[in-house]
Image (cartoon, rainbow, N blue to C red):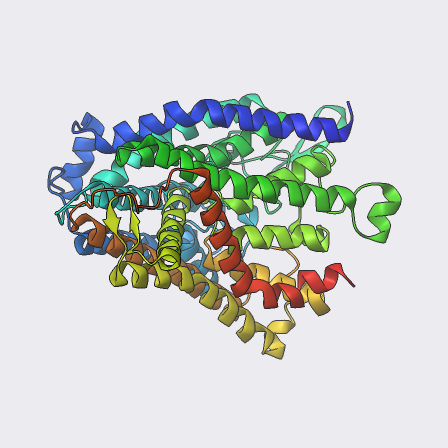
Length: 553
């Protein structure tokens, strides 16, 4: 079987499984968040937290709950790292330095999971399990809770009640993320990933004289990592390591986990608003953008637009021979189209245009399908902007799902969209304007700029992957990227929750002959066009100086 055909079958089988799971899993998540019964474990958690699960919150109270929970998470994780040497299961690891501890605490609490360190030589088991792994679950559940709240904003009328954050958080963790991660860990163990508590620095002599570093609850961490939640990994080379991604079929399975929840959430949205076809329209936007990105990144990598790749027939630098070019490019597209950030190859070694596509995926706002929860609410904000633009074209007050999109709604949507580009471009400019920070670049010229641009794009969009050619473990980068992760996560969440509150207070507007149909291919095309145009207008100059300049050099 040729590599091209194998790549097509690899992608095609993923698409088939995602399509088959879209409806049942989306319906399951709808039942999770709309059910009225609480299971025994959930009731115990509510009592421990002092939460009244039947009491609903206004958007401002919901936002304060999100911020309070995240602040406690950051402080706890920071303290756990700083006190690591005094805790059991530390494996003799020294305390994590203050700037790395800050960066890591913010990174995992914001669902970014950018790693400025090597996991196997910096973090003991207690920090990995009680700190990082816990945040892999709950930070993802926060994103899902915010997405569900925006859905309620569209679905409800004349009310200030948008649900209870603590209930949404617990249900998303207990009923969705934990079960999938548990099953995923078993599958990955069967695929060859290790799951033990051996010292990760112990060298075990295997049959045939081979040697391998053993250790760690890697399979369970890998299942959590690729569940569309984060890009952190136990080993520094992430999912390129055979202990984190053993074979081509575990590679396929990890990509499936990455895309499962984000692609099923539009179905949940359709059920929440009582119009399933609206969910299909949002899923179509995600699929269109994802397919275009997937095709382009595979074409750029398979064509190998450089002298050496053309001579050998493939751009294999930085890629695992177990996966090859096509599967590596597909993994890269999935990881950067979502907020996962896991990698099975070095994006720094990609062709200039292939590397550019990984950045563009994040610059889209990670909405195709995006992060767990964050992708859907980001795309719904873009849908709001689209109906506003369409309303201006025909001279009508814009409406979406029976809700008027007025000045307040557009201000919130605009601020949401402007946050991450501002963080990316300002952060990159500050880094490039300092000789000391430019020294962290492994390469000069356009590729060096791409390394810095990628880092701030990844941080501000809460992705967590890196170009790997930049030495970002410095006090300045740890602080600056930490601030980007913090602001890039919580400012958009506040704007989304405020938008949800504004929509929920409105009375429904009956559809008329002048109402823009938002479930048809025309609207799907408009949302895709608005998304691409906004990204192009915002980031094209920076891309022209980086990967585009390198690509035509």
